[in-house]
Structures are given as C-alpha cells and as structure tokens.
Amino acid sequence: MARGRAFFLALSNSERLRRLATDSAPARAMSRRFIAGEKRAEAVSLVQRLNLEGLLGTLDYLGENTTSDTEAQDSATEVLDLLGELEAADADAGVSIKLTQLGLDLSPALAAENAQGVVHRAAEIGRFVRIDMESSEYVQPTLDLFEELWQSHKNVGVVIQSYLYRSTEDAARLVEMGASVRLVKGAYDEASHVAYPDKAGTDASFLRLAEQLFSDRAQTLGVYPAIATHDVALVDWVREHTRRFRISPDQFEYQMLYGIRRRLQRKLVAEGYRVRVYIPYGEHWYPYLMRRLAERPANLVFVLHNLLRP
Ligand code: FDA
Image 1 (cartoon, protein in one colour):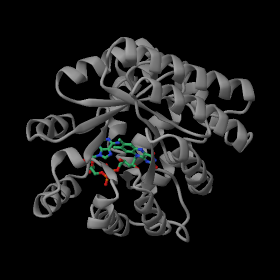
Image 2 (tube, rainbow, N blue to C red):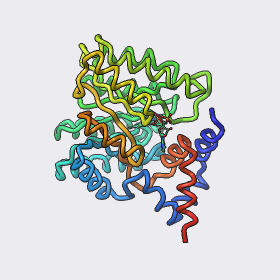
Image 3 (cartoon, protein in one colour):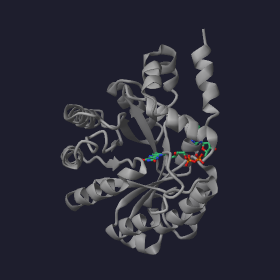
C-alpha cells in the first residue's frame, strides 16, 4: 500500500485528531468540499439542486462503529427522518447506510432490527437502501444480513470491493440472487493476505468483477450494477463494454462521491447515463474525510490552504 494512503487511513482511527479536527472551524469549513453539511436539511437541499442537473442521489448520514444501543437507534431514527424528508421534498434519492452505525459491533440482532426498519420504511415510499461495505471483518456479517433483508425486500443492495480476493465468489453469489450490486475498489487499510496491495491488482479485479456483473447470466437474472469509481479508464471501459454487449444505459448506473469529478458526472448525464452522487452529511465526518485524503493525498494541499487561510 502506498505510504500516503496508509498514513491517512491510520489517522482516520485517531480519536485525538478526530476531536481536534471536529472542533476546528477551518477544518469544518474545508470538509465541505466532500460533505453536504452537518445538517440533514443541507443534504436534502443539495440533492434537490443536483436533481435539477439530472443527477440522482444517495444520502449518507455519517457515522460508524457506534458504541451504545441508544446511539445505534438514534442513527436509525435519523435515517428514517431523512427518508421522510426526501419524500416530502420529492427528491430523486435513496440512502446509504453502514451496519456498524446501526449497531453491528454491539449485536448483529440490533443492526438487523435497525436495518429492517429502514429498508421497510424506504419500501413504503419507493426509495432504495444501499448497505455500504466496511472493512474486511464486516464483509461476511454484512452479506449475511443483506441476504436476510433480500428475502423480504428488493429495494436494498450491497457493495463489492475489488481489492478483496474473496469478491469473485461473493459477486457470483450475488449474481445468482439477481441483486443490485455497487462495485467499488475499496477504501480501508487491508492486509495483503485479504486484499490486493497495489492499484494494478485492484483495477484488474475491478474489470473482472464488472464483467461478472454485466454477464449474460447476470443480465438475465436482473442484476443491476452500480459502477462506483472516479477512474476515467474504468468509466470508459464500462461505456465501451456495455455498448458492445448492447446493455442499455437504464440497466446500470455510474456512481461518484460528492465533490469528486463533477465535470465527468455531468458529461455522463449529458451522454444519457444514470449518475448517482453519494452525498454524506452529519457531524461525524472525520473518518470519511481521512479516507478521501488517503485516496488522493494531493487533497491535503486543498485542506492546508483552507486551514491556513486568515
Ligand atoms: P482511484 O482511487 O484509483 O482514483 C482514480 C482517480 O479518481 C484519481 O486519480 C483521482 O483523479 C480521482 N479521485 C479518486 N479519489 C479521489 C479523491 N478522494 N479526491 C479527489 N480525486 C479523487 N468504498 C468502500 O470500501 N465501501 C463502500 O461502501 C464504498 N462506497 C462508495 C460509493 C461511491 C459512490 C463511490 C464513488 C466510492 C465508494 N467507496 C466505497 C470508495 C471506493 O472504494 C474508493 O476508495 C474510491 O472510490 C476511490 O477509488 P476510485 O475508484 O475513484 O479510483
């Protein structure tokens, strides 16, 4: 793993830095490059603006690894309230959730109950729920809970990370279920016995997994791939591959993070593709921001510029 990436991922776990950053007004201001704001209303109004430009949204109430039942339940309540506001605003957006935010570290049953509530409410108002994938120790419990939810609800999808060696088998299983799968490279600090340590291995795996998700079998079974990357080479590959195999733009979507590759997002919309923007909001933005710095340490220049501004 590149040293810069490992450095920022290690910082993402520092409680001291988290407190320093979240108490600092300039740090909060600079987090705005990637985060809608600390309030739900800011995220809803941002998605409405993006909708006007033809972009779709998935909103993420920031937070992970909650340490009490109350905290986990409060997070679930926030997501339920968010769904209510998306409906009231008639926003074209769903939600992304993390199971550790809903209590997975405390008890799988608690996370399951909270996730059930969210997926059920989203189904009532015709919204989609994506379960984000966290670090590798959570992959199996996340897939297990996803399968459980899938039995009763089809408005839910999961994520596959191309840096993990196990993903080929996981994707094969999800294809047989006809699931909606977001494909990403993977954002956590993983050991080389579970994940490709280099970009080349991760990118090659991304293409193999995309082929799996776009295969005839997957298409027949109703798999809906969400290709989540800012990597232009991969975006172009998907465009060519889907054209060649006559997979129409409504059979998949591109997804990108808020604040990254804005021009490419709009260009794809103009070409007739579905593009969904992942929009995080809330007070717990520190680990999310550190992961964005890990992906592109050059973002630090932007951060420092904001911190040093008089
Ligand atoms: P890569 O990191 O190779 O970057 C390609 C190019 O994109 C860079 O050269 C740069 O130009 C641009 N770029 C990438 N990251 C940037 C940044 N932070 N700032 C500025 N430019 C940047 N991960 C995970 O483990 N679980 C999950 O559930 C999700 N969910 C998710 C949803 C969506 C919609 C997206 C787009 C991504 C995720 N991810 C994720 C994150 C993902 O795993 C990965 O870390 C990032 O997308 C960065 O990888 P890229 O595919 O963009 O390629």
